[in-house]
Length: 246
Image (cartoon, rainbow, N blue to C red; front, side):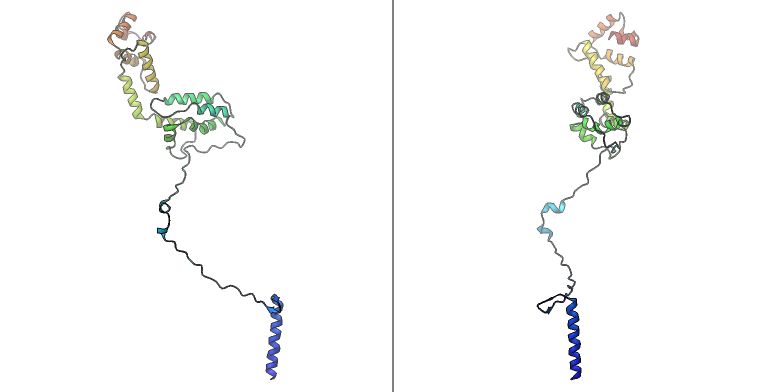
């Protein structure tokens, strides 16, 4: 009997101590029991239930520009008029478009606007892509990523892309096979040949070679006129004399 009383007293004491450590409501002891670890459930989706395009979708990385990003001051601003003039003088990349003429025009416009000494080259690199359109824009974007760090590299990459050796050889062959068109005057024929020479930049033809190509490409009646004008055989004149007559 004594042992039972002692056990009851001990149980009462434990109950009181427990009630002081936990919150109570209406004299009921609330014991916070930690939640048991629950293994996360895996949801398995049937691939046949997904949209067909989802399995084949691949998001490719966006390629970088061929031009390496130029470091400029935070306050650096390109003149809006400058950019507008460049955009109004675009190169489309087709055969009739003169590549060297485009470079000359681009530089002439750039020379009209002054920036800091260290910023002029950065301006050319930043705005040159805006001078391209259509086929030229597409082909320029095919250049290797971050392969251009200077204006000279830009100029060479542009010329090589749109004036490859095959095109150069074709234009040079057209010059060597030059002939006067029907109903074309002497002056018109000469101007057309000069335009062909200008498009075939770096052709390496001397004045004498050009005069011979021109003379042999003329009709016999026009050759006779040149001979009378030269008061002798036209090709016997010096290069400078022949150029002045033609």
